Amino acid sequence: MKLYGSQTSPYVRRIRLLLADKPHDFINLNIFAGQDRQTLAAINPTLRIPMLEHDGEVIFDSGVIYRYLAAQLGLTALSWYQENQLTVINAVNDSLVMLLQCSRSGFDTSEDKLFFDLQKERVATCLYVLEQQAANSEFSQWHYVSMALYSLIDWTLFRQLVELDDYPALLAFVAANSQQPGVAVSDPRLG
Ligand SMILES: N[C@@H](CCC(=O)N[C@@H](CS)C(=O)NCC(=O)O)C(=O)O
Image (tube, rainbow, N blue to C red):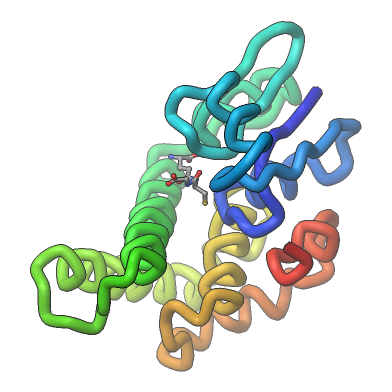
């Protein structure tokens, strides 16, 4: 089983955490340049990571990879409530990736522009809900949704994308899970 990704991607990290105690090869790509980008393009036309290669199949997208692995590993299906939690986590993640890419493209994302405002509003409304759920101990089990949340919040801290002081339960959640299997080796700060 081969997982293609990068050290810094939060979408890749959630799958690495899921596979932490399962035999697999991690292929660390620089998806934005050189030979690695050609490797990515040859495998995945969406030009996004992660992707998983197993038994002659290549699976794109962390959500689909999770469904594939859940079937392989015999994991319990997510409840609809957990699916919604994952959607909320993904919404923050997607908006922050877009803001980061805008910033790296030379845009001043602190400007009052519709696109930036919409992303920031979504990040705030979603983080508010996740904070309440964390305070309510809804992520006290180390399952896939918790892994996705951990990957998002730790990446947000690493990239310094949002001031998280207003989200003490999310910070406590990250602190409480820093010793979970696979967390140290998948730290984006090693990228
Ligand atoms: N829906 C996708 C999102 C994956 C994603 O956005 N990955 C980022 C890295 S964190 C990426 O590949 N970005 C490349 C790009 O936007 O060109 C998933 O869940 O796998």
